Length: 125
Image (cartoon, rainbow, N blue to C red; front, side):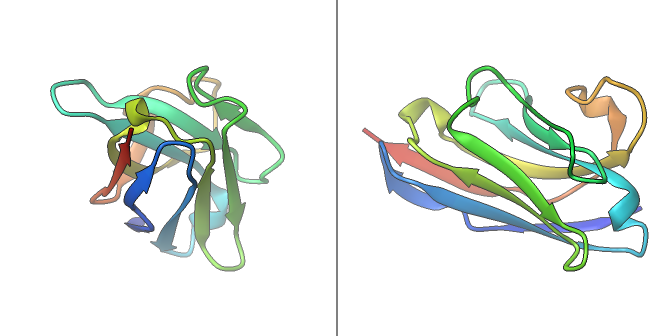
């Protein structure tokens, strides 16, 4: 298990930017695949972005491609989500997740074994 704590959420106007951070504890962090998911009120949790343990491979949901960037610093046990050109439909609770770095099913919540408590992102129009 990896313990995860998100930070960096808040209220921002449409077109603005936010940077989310996810601090991890656990000596196996660097070998984990990391993902960001989000959940809006009344909706299911959905995939946002994923990064493999080496950082060489990243994947994004179509809805955020070109606007969001996921990155990781294994030395600092931290994963980031830079969010630019935010839209009101990006409003949600954002969750960081850690999973075993194998297979191609990076968008499925069931592939991740550890989750943070979430951080609220609100984008006003």
